[in-house]
Length: 203
Image 1 (cartoon, rainbow, N blue to C red):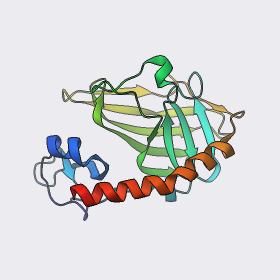
Image 2: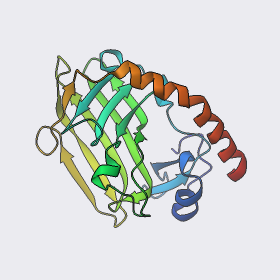
Image 3: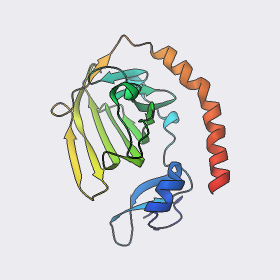
């Protein structure tokens, strides 16, 4: 069945992606069971309300902070691309990657230490439109010990990268997470107002 807040199984790849991307999601059509990009009236999960338990306020990095590091804040987990200006990482429209790319549709299973979440790319990044994450942590939360990222391409192809083999992330215990959380919180009210104006204009 379609999520109750979806308008219907309408293929809206052009209008939805280009215009109303904060209110879109990838779901399976209940008729033909193929992946359609459906127009929705609200996001599926409020990530900021996610109970991260022991994962809360931890950062995991591959190389260093800001180079696709994973930040699990109470205000919402995200991937940091703060080093994008230095590295020249850009979206397909020529703009830099966002400093903070928020995870959507998040869950965290404390018993199995498993986080799941999606990264949507309304403006495509290296031919990608969606990343689906399953992240498994070791018992001490010192590293990402398992899981995968499934990448969905605009060409229709998919690719799977595995943590511990293709992607190696470890916990960074030195970064000032409290300072970052405070800075992110100070902008949340302004971002909420901007989203409200966006909805009023396009919906």
